[in-house]
Length: 154
Image (tube, rainbow, N blue to C red; front, side, top):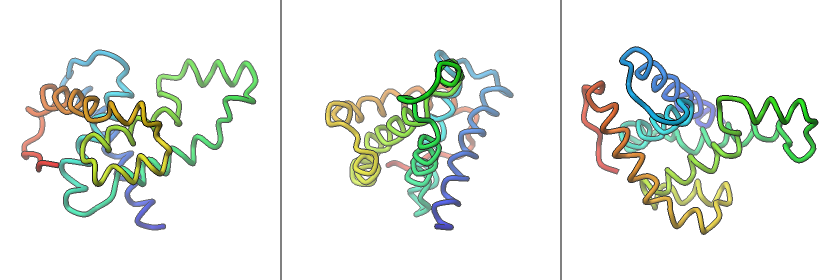
């Protein structure tokens, strides 16, 4: 369990690092910054950390899965539903599926466990490689000049 908590903390740290790089360097983004920070965290984790043997993505998915259990959309009252839907973050369950998909697209053999864990639907799984390629190009283009080390290939 300590490895899971450690990995989840790294996942959150890299998400916040993404915000810091965007804010300090005025990195141009389109879309929601929270989603871009999730993409940066996944990119950084897969290219720099997981290739060294430290799991980050799966523990982060586990954390968001636990958080999603506290937000039952189907039985939420109108005020709760409005608060969740208007939040700057994607819903926790959406973040779970996004991270699992991007992990699958980054490295099919390592990402398969995440996709299985969350029950990623096949129609989404079939697009994950393409989604990750887009994410990879975008993060490299917008963030690479702020990273002084070269990523390892997935």
